[in-house]
Image (tube, rainbow, N blue to C red):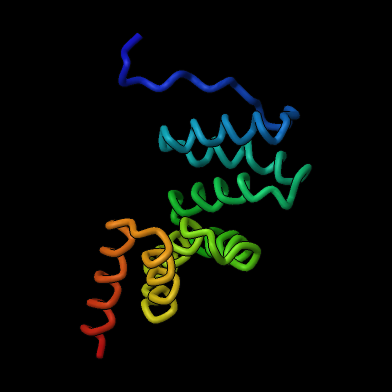
Amino acid sequence: MNDDMLPTPPVVFPGQTAAPESAYRTAYDLLARRAPKEALEVLEPALEKDPDNTGLLSLRAWAYFIRVQLKHAQADLERLVADNPTDDWAQHALGRCLERQSRYADALPHLRLAAAMSGDWDYGLAVLRVEEQLNRSE
C-alpha cells in the first residue's frame, strides 16, 4: 500500500445506524478525501441521535463549507461559537464563512479573535485579507 494514501473508511450506507464515534471517524476520512456529500450522509443520522455532539457539528459545518452551502455552515458555526466562544477553529471557520459571503465587517471580529487565540499564521493572514477587502470598499 502506498504510504501517501489514506486507509479506506468503513462503508456506511444511508439509513444504516452507526455510533457517533464511528460516524465521526468515517465522516472525517470522507472530508479529508474531499467527499462532503458522502460525509453528510453519514453525519445526518448520527446528529439525529446526538444533536449536541460538537464534533459531529464541526464536521457537518466543514462539509457544508466545502459544498459552498454557506448558510448551513454558518448556522452550525454560530451554534458552535455560541456554545464555546474559545473554540478558535469555529471562530475562524465562521469568519471564513462570512468572508466567502462578502460579509467582511461581520467576518473580521471572528477572524481576529481566532488569530489572537491561536497564534496561527494562516488565521493572521485571513485577518489581513479581510482588512484589505474592507479598506478597498471604503
